[in-house]
Amino acid sequence: MSSTTLPPSSEPTASEVLVQEYLAQNPVLDKELGDIEIMTDRYTNAEWAKQIAETVERVQGNLERGARKYECPAVASKEFAKTIDHTVLKLDAKEGQIDALCSEARTEGFKSVCVRLNYVSRCVSNLKGSDVLVACVVGFHEGTQDTYSKLREARAAVVAGAAELDVVLNHSILTSVPSTASVITSDSLTAFNTAANSKPPDGASTPVEGPYSKTNKAAPSKDLPTTSSPEAEAELPNYSAIYTELASIRSLCPNPVVLKLILETSQLTPSQILAASHLAAAANFDFIKTSTGFNGAGATLPNIQLMVAASEYLSTIYPRSNKTRRGMEVKASGGVRSLEDAVMYLEAGATRLGTSSGLWIMQEARRVGEERTGQRPGGVSRLYTDDSTDGY
Image 1 (cartoon, rainbow, N blue to C red):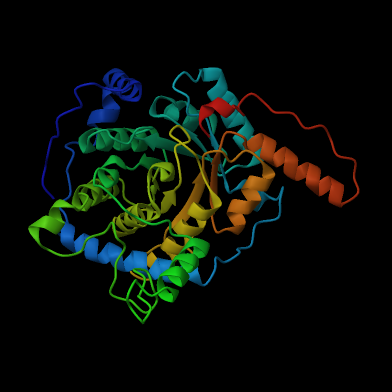
Image 2: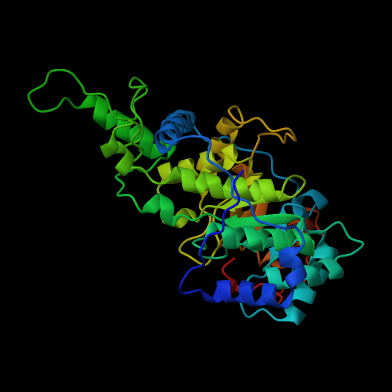
């Protein structure tokens, strides 16, 4: 590893100002672990592109065979509650809201509370004696902060007591290169192949092979050039920059700290989602996560299915020392506001849900359970931590 200091952004966002001011007021969180180090890359951009193209092809093939349905924990059970990260991420969140968030998470037995850096210490104090973890967002919500700033924020969060970090991908790196990617879902992929392979081109007597055809194993996704020519290199996103940032965060925050990469799927094509998933697995992240909830649409069923298929395939390439059932796991976040949403995403293969509607979901779950057993359901009300403008 080489020690590197990167220049800060010229125009900090409100989120960056919050972090900078908090670190200035709490210098022990910023200095305790010494110098920040940036990891070196493992591969060239062309080498990353070749690996990612293979991932795209394999995951596409798996999706063609249909998405699996996974077992969802019994609603209202302890196991069901442990899929929920109870969340307040508004910049203007007040101490009273954070205290209530922790009290609710303790009462319901949620997996974690997820907050910004300035409230990590307060949550740790509130949750002493419980098994509820504290998660902290990093680079939230833009993801475009420089690597050095993200590393400082990640380190401070861990020193303050965070057990999990939800890191926002700098998705602008993936989207800065013109893309002609197709939509990768089982239905659209089948339709595309059928059309491409059943219609001969004008003047030809035999069908063409579609770029994603099963019979065309050498053809990568259109937006992932794999040759090493200067022209092809110029068309590649800077995969090395993404990997270096993720690997540096992993090195600075080793296991047992749990790292989740927020992809911001609303801003990415399916092939770009798979590229980000590949780089997260290579950097030994524990989760890939759909959304911040602050930038476009949140979780969708096709994206969850795509990410689950990716995590399962990538577990065969990047086996983990602390194995779960399938390498990286998937977290659905952004717009998860009902029991129906929660069950749908868990049955699609997600193992964690990021939501500010955890109480509402659990109350719905208990009502459903009571109705099934013939008991009279109690009243259901939305409590104030369930705030649809929160992003989650």
